[in-house]
Length: 373
Image (cartoon, rainbow, N blue to C red; front, side):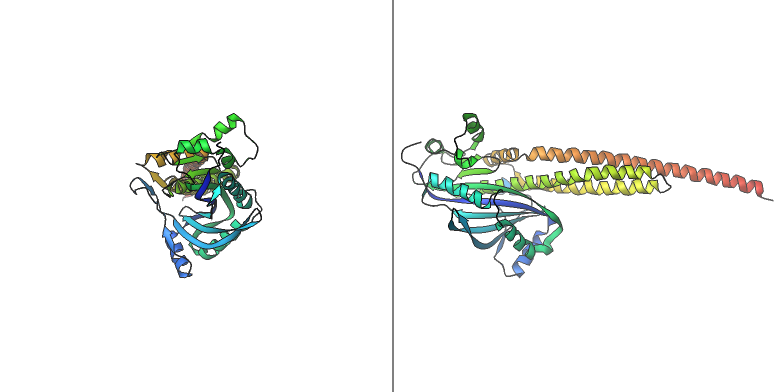
């Protein structure tokens, strides 16, 4: 580190909290409801600098602006801008953005860590729950099959648009230590831990930089583009939705086994109907989960922008989205196999019932022939 500490001229700190609130959100209806309640203007999300044919949302999310609120960071009041995005697959993403201008790098790092203590995952803060209740209260009519239990994800981003000096990304990494900002730790980390934390770093131009970890990111973007921030938000939304379906299937599998055993123990003339009803229920579950997971997978299409594609792929890997997706697929495969087995058993039960009916009719015909005058 140089003796003269580098200063952040203009920047911001953005805290995200994402909630799974429903099976889906009718974005058109949400836009209508929001406008009818005389709220702020709403817009459909798009990336700011990337051409639409290079990167585009599958279904553009609905962006809303709420009234600013005051946070207390290290006993000092700070004004935070509040924005909300609604994703059609049932996720509400909220962001609190505070300015970080004309401060030293160490003060910038301290401000980001203070933001984490105030509204981070370990903070006893009612800020997020209050904002969520406000949004859900207004847009309840647009939520399709709202969920009672709320699953959430959080992410913290430090953004610098200009330093006190013009720097290349290489010079920047020589002048500042990114580890305290990315880790939130006050003590010095081991060299192995530092290397692992700084493993995911990306630059497209000579004067920009993105450094990612599983719950934090640092972005140096002199042009003010927000595309990387938007991509990280979508990746977090995908993780949240995959986690929801992973937990849903975790809870469903034991119930499925119990229902299958109960159905097999009930060997009556209606057994085939019971097998068919259970198979139909499992097929409906598989169809719904498959439809929504495909919608989540297609939430963002990255085709021609190689740089954003690399950042997006790295974020998905860091957030464990492919691993959770694979777990969901394994559980869906188990349910599909169970459905196929139940369908076969239902078909077998129907065949047995038909054979019994035929034998009964034959026996009845013989009896009638014997007793006929």
